[in-house]
Image (cartoon, rainbow, N blue to C red; front, side):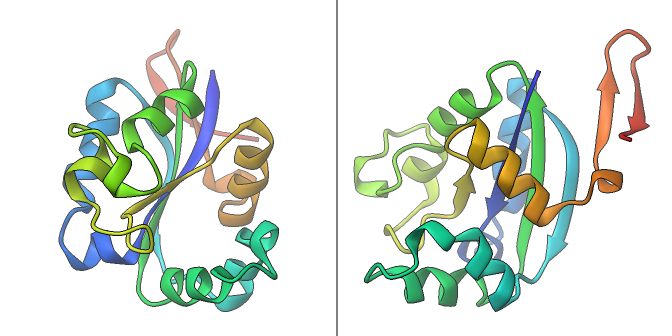
Length: 150
């Protein structure tokens, strides 16, 4: 099992797209083990986008992600990172295939409705930025029940 972080960005929430986007992950078979509506602070955004500091688009990233509420989620499932990245589509919606989240809903690179971790190291780092260990659940197929993570 693999875990990854997704962020449903402010443009998606403003357009009422959270439900349709989140339901795609459940329909695919992924389990939400963490989910919350939140306003990202500038400090958290700076930590989240630390790898982009100094790049020309950095300030725009921070300004956008802090401009309104987001939904942060942790999804769990086999090959979650790769499959969810494919479901999201290319970062630039103009290059995203129809049927992907960005291909169906996103308008521009700056307003591309969703973020997803791009690898295992990023997923671990990003999940720890947005969720404490006691905010995450585990789903046990053996018992078919939800339990708190330690």
